[in-house]
Each structure stands twice: as structure tokens, then as C-alpha cells.
Amino acid sequence: MAMQDRVIIRDTTLRDGLQLVVEQVPAAQKIKWLHDLVHAGVTQIEVSSYVPPKVIAQFSDVADVVQGAMGQGVDISVLVPNLNGARRAFDAGLPQVNFVLSASEAHSKANTRKTRDAAVKDFEAIVAERTARNLDHTRLSAGIATAFGCTMQGAVDEDEVVALAITLRDLGADEILVADTVGYGNPAQVRRILGRIAEAIGPDRILSHFHDTRGLGLANVVAALDVGVRRFDSTVGGLGGCPFAPGATGNIDTEDLAFMLQSMGYDTGVDIPQLVALQRQIAAALPAERVGGCIARAGLPINASAAVTA
Amino acid sequence: MAMQDRVIIRDTTLRDGLQLVVEQVPAAQKIKWLHDLVHAGVTQIEVSSYVPPKVIAQFSDVADVVQGAMGQGVDISVLVPNLNGARRAFDAGLPQVNFVLSASEAHSKANTRKTRDAAVKDFEAIVAERTARNLDHTRLSAGIATAFGCTMQGAVDEDEVVALAITLRDLGADEILVADTVGYGNPAQVRRILGRIAEAIGPDRILSHFHDTRGLGLANVVAALDVGVRRFDSTVGGLGGCPFAPGATGNIDTEDLAFMLQSMGYDTGVDIPQLVALQRQIAAALPAERVGGCIARAGLPINASAAVTA
Image (tube, helix red, strand yellow):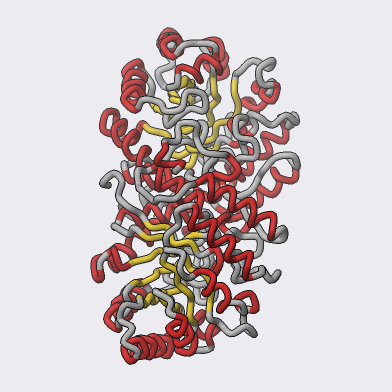
């Protein structure tokens, strides 16, 4: 590892973190948290989703949140479930648009009532729409959910995940998000699958999205780093439970991820104490949610260098 | 990694897990938990400490616990703070005796009122006592606490840790325990330090002891596996808080460690559901303690193979 290698932490507190939070968080509150993230040095933020409000009411304020998030000098992006959502994202002038499909056929059908092949066609239509609008500067991310296993079908074929990543890249994805949606992944598997995808499309195109449901989130990050991946999703306080694992933690924790990376000598550019302060605000605002992390609880080591704290 | 490489999980619930538990756990209860560990397939167990009762009252029943633990067909060991403790351990006929000193001079003086050099002399005296008694079949483990940093002195010199490991091996240690006593270690550092020690004395002589205080426990295990280490300490439910980090988790969790290792294809020989059942018993018996882990909370994946569950 080269010291001071840059690693990007893409925060998805406002999207994946809030996705299952029933209590409606006001748009102004979301924008305040986004400002705090930016102030703490986070440069890439997924801010909301263009999913229909009847599916997830939490994102019914997506237009307001996007408006408040634009012009902050950071890369913001929004999740889109289909071509209609992508059109809204293109209309809003977002610099990046994130589409996600599922590697697991069972999960795909349950989650979107579509086969995996139909979802690939959706992504093709989104790429065509971008082309028709001459929006080549708008980055398209294609995500592969349940890439490491699925709570419905169990194991997911690794060859199929790798092939899917290549297909999506070939169709026009600028970035491939590879997601352990339900926390089934392990470091050996992460090295295998991400290693193969990195070899096929280059590690720089990969964004890893791990959940810490079974405690292996940061161990999986180490495995991903080993095969050259330098971009990771996370949420403040690990916000984001999984509906299929009651009481389980959700995403990997932004503060703990930053601590690990910076301790290892990677440059993330984020200020951990500021993130811990934000975590406390979010925990206070959402008393029904599990919000927490090890660094917030135990504190930084006394020998943490300036690079770790700022 | 060769599939089905054997990895040893040494459980230290009864020693490091209980060390700071104020409520006295009856010896019969400890022996019951030990039986459950053995039944779950754990083959190496640290059962108590010959520390004076006025220092840690929890271990005042060490004689009873050792008597109850012997003859179970597993390798049991006991921690000894000095030559006097080692004499009691030799008298009891224990197959393995564990001595620990501290790489941090500040920690050494605070913890044992001895310099590090004086502690090395203590180990030398323990080895001489073993020789004088013709107990060459009794294994001696020498532990290096605060090998990855110290809450009092901060950073600990890596060269000194490596040199200490070599010294202890040269003096007669059969095993070198390398301990992240306060949860300061990170995977890059673990690879460096354990890699160097493995090169000097062989990976088979190393036992890693990680704390999960800052969430990096299992990530550090992955790093240790990478340099050939195949022996890890842990406690059921991660029992064992750190007095310097209130509310922080302590040891790495035996069930989560087993899950990660078995998912990665390593053979640990332990039955995870049985360990989860034991965790629930321990949690019920010690309501004031933080006892928990991800697998106990989230459950095993539905595609967990027989190798993972038994």
C-alpha cells in the first residue's frame, strides 16, 4: 500500500440511512446534516431517492433536498429506481445518478417486481436517455445489490455477479456499485468477487457498499482495499437497519470507516470528531433508531495523528 | 488461502471476559460454561488467573475452576502474573501456563509496578522453574500486552515489540501472544508487526489477541490471517470491557469470529448456534455487562453451510 493513498468515503446517510426510518425527517433537517457532512470533509454524498412517495414516504421531499444540496461544492447523487426517476434526476441537473438492480433473481422480483434481465433493460433505457439529452458529463452509476448473497435465495452465483458488472459497464455505467445488501459477505468472497471485477473493469470504477449486519463490514473493506478498491459507501452512526434482520446494524459506520482508513495511512480528508458530533445530533433527532459506532463510544486513540483527526 | 485450513479459536471468556466483572460468578457456574464451550467444539480455553484475590476477587476460586476444568479433553491454561503464580500453576499440573508482560513501559509500571525489563526477568525465572521441575511438556506462553499502542503512552515502538517477541521465544516461550490490549491496532499495523514476528519466529508460534474497542477486531484478524497467523483469542459475546473506555466493547466475539472464519473457508471445529445459546445464558447471568455480538443478533445467513453451523 502506498501511504496517503486517497480513499473516497461516499456517505449515504440521507438515502440508505433514512430509507427505513418511519419518522419523517424535515427537508431542512436533512440539508443541515448535509452541510455538516460537507463541513466535515465528505466530498461525495447520496442525498435521496426518486422512488415514488407511496413506496417510501421519507423521500417525498426529494426535490427540496436536491435543491438544497446543489451548489455545495461536493458531488451529490440520487438513487433512481427506473427510467422515470432518471428523467427527474436529469431534469434536476444532478451530476451523478445511481441506478441499482439485484443480482439475486428472487430479490429483484420481490423488490421491484422485475426480473434481473428487465432491470438491465431499464438501465439500458436510462443510458439511452442520457445520450438523447446529450448529458455525457452526467455520471451514471449502476449498482448490483445482493452481490454477496440474498436473504431470499441464499447464495448468489459469483460468475453471474462478475458478468453483470461487465454488462453494466459495457452498457455505459461510469461506476459499478457492488453491494452486500444484507450483510452476507465475507472477506475471502469479497477478495474473489471484487478482485475479478477489478481485473475486468479496473478497480477505479468500483464503489463498495457493505453492511455490518454480521459484524464483517470493516473486515470486508480491508479485503476490498487489497484488490485495489478505493471507494466505499457508509452512513453516520451506521444508520440504516435491514428489515429482514431486526435489531441488526445496517451500513458500515462513516466515523469508524474513516478511523480505520486513516489509521492505516490512507487519506480520506474527513474530520472524525466533526462526524462524531453529527452522529450525536442524528441520534438525538431519531431516538427510535440504532445510531452508534465504536469511535463515538470509545473515542480516538490518544496517539491519533493530525491525519486521523483532521 | 488453502481451503479448510485449520484455525484455532482460544476462548478466554472465563479469564479476560470475567476479569472486570464485579459480580462474583460462582465456580460451578464457570465450570458449567466451560463444559458448554467444550461441547460447542472449543479446544483451547484460558480458564482463570493466579492473580492474588486482593487484586481481582473474581479469580479467588481459581483452584476450584482449574480442578473442574481438568480432564475435559481440551487444552486449558491459566494466566500467571509472576513466578509465584507460575509455581501454583505447575503444582496444579496445568498443560499450559500463560505469562503476560507489557510492551509499553508506562502500562507495565501502572499494571504491575515493574519495568518491562523486570518483567522479562520474571519470565526467565518462570522458565527456570519449569526446567528445575522437569516440566518440559508444560507449554509456556509469553504475552506482549499493548503491542499495538497504549492508552497511557500512546504509540509503542514496533521494533521493540518485534525484539521482545524474539527475546521471549529465545528465553523459552512455546507461544507468543501478541495483544492489542486497548483496541488501538489497525490492519496495516497488524500486518507489519505480526508479519515481522512471523518471519522471525514462525507464524505457528503466534497467538493474536485483539480487542474490538474501536470496531477493528475482525478486520485485524483478516490482517493476521494474511501473514499466516492461525490462532486467535476471543470471548463469548465479546465479554470483557476495557476500564479505560467506558461502554466500549471488549474482546472480539467468539461467535462472530467463528462465523467469519468459517464463511471464509477455514475450519474452526466450533458450533456457532451452541455458542449463541451459551452467550444468551451468560447475558442472562450478567445483566450489568455488555454481552452481545452480530451473529447472535442477526442470525446466520440462510445459505450458511454445514461447515459454518457445525
